[in-house]
Length: 319
Image (cartoon, rainbow, N blue to C red; front, side, top):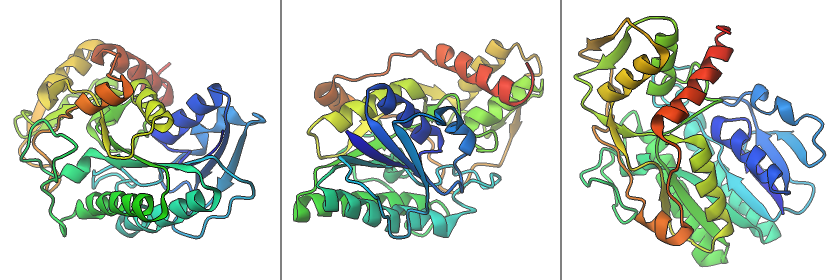
């Protein structure tokens, strides 16, 4: 196939480019580098099956040749207000990527009769009252809170995708992505994985907000990409959760990183720091992914963290 991937220079988008190229497809990457990095695609220079268009998806998208699939991954994704790449600091761009970007990419899919895959998020569930979260759960979201620029953009994107499927007959898919980690995460992302790893590698105590009892589920990037590709090849139109159902507290997560790195500085607790509306618990129900895609995570947390730590050590100039 000939595939357009928006957000191609981002963490997930660049891994997706690699995987689909390895499977023999031609890939067109698109990014405006607001949060993505050219370094993530540098290794593809000279690949005759890869081309790149620098473009903001909130503007009309022109693709010179027909495409068979469109994968919309363009959006800021970090909730951390201390990160220059966080959606709190890019609120308008985030909403435009989710709203106008989804509209424009769906337009490309409609023009060429291409299949379409939307990268949605576990954040559409908000601070959930259901645990673990199934795709049938409608969510518990503050529509005007600081996180709403991302949460509501993705909820709108899902609604628009389904409208194009039902009204125009577009062959659509929706993946709801839970916390994912791995090489190519931005050092200034501001989320827990890069923050903890960098503190550990610098020999500093890891900063845990509150008592560390809040939980997340951490899925290694290779597992996630496998699930996305299976969904792309499937005939499923309704949303599918992809993530690791193994729930880990932030405190446990910090302890694991310190142990792998050999950081003796320990952990410090801060009473404040969690972003308003930050969910206390996050865990996917992946039964639909198992049944429809035959998918579940394979990479153990410590194995994935070792690969991620090695990447951060290299990027920090420590080897």
